[in-house]
Length: 384
Image 1 (cartoon, helix red, strand yellow):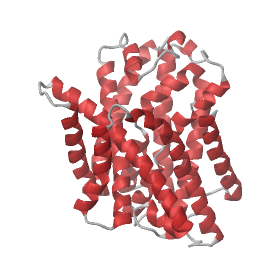
Image 2 (spheres, helix red, strand yellow):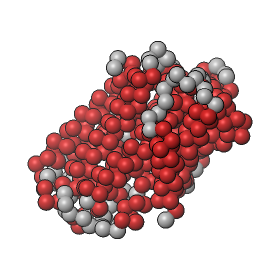
Image 3 (tube, helix red, strand yellow):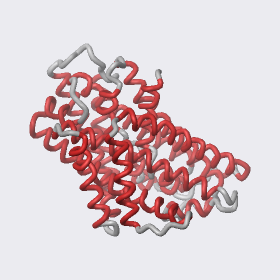
């Protein structure tokens, strides 16, 4: 795999490694390591296969940068409308959340160096500067994301090394909550934590010279990196915290504070990791929305830049204290967009025998039925 494809895999990984990195232990640790691991692997497998279905649809339609063209060719105008509605709802919601989170971190940093910058100005500054990077193209995002991802992985490695001396093997088998229904309810958090499929059409266009096998491997590698990171972090949390602590955390700050006895540096390192994870996720989501707008409206870079960031920034400025509740619906949107839409696209391209020599996701009709059942399982887990 060349550096361009590797960088693309890291964009996939960086898009997935957002808030879920620290949220996963808070929802899974109470169920013990083994059950949490099995559910996470199942979610990762289902999400990766859905991404491969989207890859198949993208390659066989020979479409442009966004889902708009792919949906138009496979699902017609009604399907195109529904796909665009779901995609814009998801991406704008996520970008609003990332702007709010990044502005908060930026405000903390400016206060640390003695500057008094308001939250509103932090939001505007972050959006304008990061938006310029997105407008420079996928290549610019790729190169910057490699650097950020490298630092992010170092931060995770340092955290694990600091926590290793206090690791207790006996904690691994301990289960605080044995309710399997409660475990299944966490599927929404896990699925959102592997939600990288929005970047696939952009990366296929970026790697236009790659063959189908290389693109397939790009997706698989990109999805395996978050799985390994999530499992390592879950392993560290379960092994380092007392069993009675595992079900008590209500936010990330409490989780980080619980590790304060291990090292005075752990909070700083985890804050760096959290900031970088948020930033790489922002780049992946913003790149997807930018390319979707280019594909849909066909405008120049300046107009596309404004179209991409005006709504997320406005929403972040006007609804900062109300928006987080909206994120609870993002999981359901993502199920339809990341599972059912690619499934419908592939069903159409296979029935119409579009570009039959291009990549075909493995498993045939059995795996299509699996993907349908996987989507139904995710919806059911959020409606229990």
